[in-house]
Amino acid sequence: MLKSVQKLAKEQDIPCQISLEEKMGCGIGACLGCAVKTSNSPADNPSYLHVCKAGPVFDSSTVEI
Image 1 (cartoon, rainbow, N blue to C red):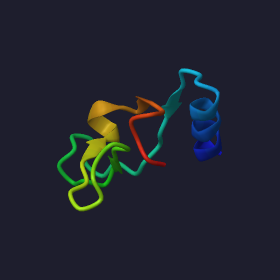
Image 2 (cartoon, one colour):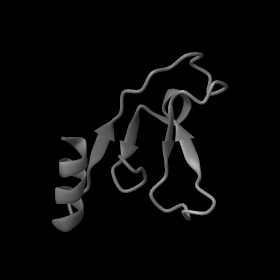
Image 3 (cartoon, rainbow, N blue to C red):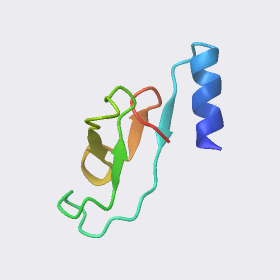
């Protein structure tokens, strides 16, 4: 559902924030259980954001769902 909302917002040029829910083993970003890939990172060297530290709410254009 969030992927569809993200796509619609991008197509209609609507500002959108999404709230992600991930398993958080440690809550401080050390375990990498809550890492989500950023949308603008290259495939050969991806970068990630931690839901527990940087979120859980993100601009929909910044993360891959």
